[in-house]
Image (cartoon, rainbow, N blue to C red; front, side, top):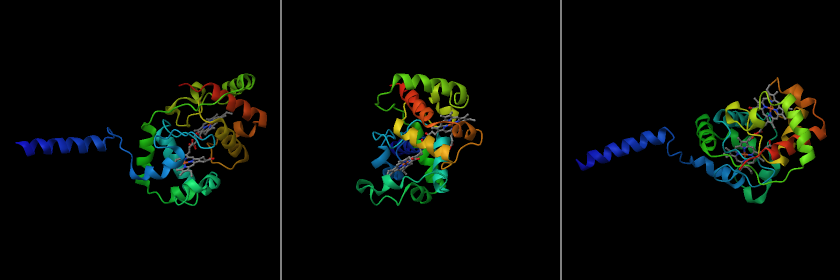
Length: 205
Ligand code: HEC
Ligand code: HEC
């Protein structure tokens, strides 16, 4: 009787784990923690928070890295405290199987997004709001705060990272949806700064 109960519990536990109810960290997540932290919430302005974005988006980014279709964060990987993980983000992604990528994406997607603790410039944010309304909101709704848009989380993301990645898009150094390209190419340096200030303003905690 006792062992039968145990068996039922063991089976239940296995089922719940496979359904992600316990959302235990996959072992590969250890390789992410030194930069993105255990829960995917970064405290470094040059490293994006990955918690709470959609699994589809996160998974896609890992494939973009695998293809070398966005800058590979060589500089951060070269820093002493991250030594031994991989040469850079593209190599790290190449070393992961599709199954591992799916598990990692599900894990970080399940974690709550937390807005970065950062100041913003009110005047620039106002200017950014206008640009966003006209050119970005249709794909990044609610100031880019909704995971279900499958377009990352912009509201509350680190400004420094956003400025860098918007410039990567503008220069064509990061893969992007075809329809986003004209919007990014048209942005001036000031527009990019204004947008980043706006997304910082829209971060909620
Ligand atoms: C040495 C630091 C470092 C480590 C380790 C690291 N990352 Fe990153 N990650 C970065 C940086 C920096 C970026 C931003 C790259 C850029 O500028 O485009 C990034 C970007 C990402 C992105 C894209 C986020 C977005 O909003 O576009 C994802 C997803 C990601 N990392 C997942 C992971 C996962 C999963 C792991 C562990 C398997 C990991 N990273 C390990 C530094 C790191
Ligand atoms: C036609 C739809 C569309 C438009 C318009 C658009 N975007 Fe995007 N954007 C996307 C999608 C989809 C992604 C995710 C791309 C991917 O999976 O690699 C994205 C990704 C991004 C990211 C990366 C987020 C991250 O976490 O790394 C930034 C930043 C961004 N967009 C900013 C903008 C800004 C600013 C505008 C307006 C000037 C804009 N986008 C207009 C669809 C769009």
